[in-house]
Amino acid sequence: MWSLKSWQGRFLPHPQPAHERLRSYAGWCDAVEGNTTFYATPARETVATWAAQTGPDFRFVVKLPRTITHDRRLTGVDEQLRAFLHAIEPLGPRAHALWIQLPGSFTPADIPTLAGFLRRLPPSHRYAVEVRHQDFFADPRATGALEDALATVDAEWIPFDTTAFFRTPPTSDAERDAWTKKPRMPRRAVALTDRPIVRYLGRDATDETVAGWQPWVRTVAGWLREGRTPTVFIHTPDNADAPELARRFHDEVRALVPALAPLPQPEPQEPLTLF
Image 1 (cartoon, helix red, strand yellow):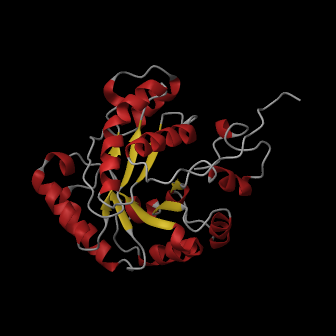
Image 2 (cartoon, rainbow, N blue to C red; image 1 turned 135 degrees about the vertical axis):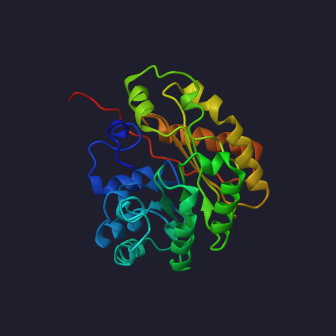
């Protein structure tokens, strides 16, 4: 997700070839969600261009294809998994974690399937799991069972915090669209590994987004003081200001943890014109 149309001429040069936009995005943020891989395994040559546009410390959190997680529900997927791992190999150390996003229909009863899948994964990668069934959050036994399954392979649990978004009714077209599509997920601020990952959904109104992330600022600062290396992704319904908001969040955390390194300095972009 580095080619949003509304970013061009603001966060990214315009015009700019699509295969060069990641390089410009990496001037704003040092991590990205690899969401396009959910819909199809990319060509290895395409992934090589992603690596070429980013430094070795850039973080990709790459989502496994839906054929593995949703269609086949982690069963009988050896061939698809091998193809995916082969495709993303050019990322090298940039593959910060492989993201296993499970559907809302994946319940605590399916934990043995997940545990078996995790045990078969190669140890050369780090893994992070996102669940959406409410019982994982509401039932302490389900929470503990999932944490135990993840602990066997040192996998992280990715929270998708949508509490700020659903706090008040939508007020824009983008918010109304997201209201019907995004899951209602609680805030879960428990790190299982040294590399926690957080997904946060705010509002189109910046002040509401910033107010909603304040608990995360304190949580992330605490993780850093503990020696962890957290990665946080900031979303809004239209994502128009996402790179700028991500930098603001980083600055707020850095105010509490001055030793945190600053983000890269982006190159200024010329505004779009009619001529």
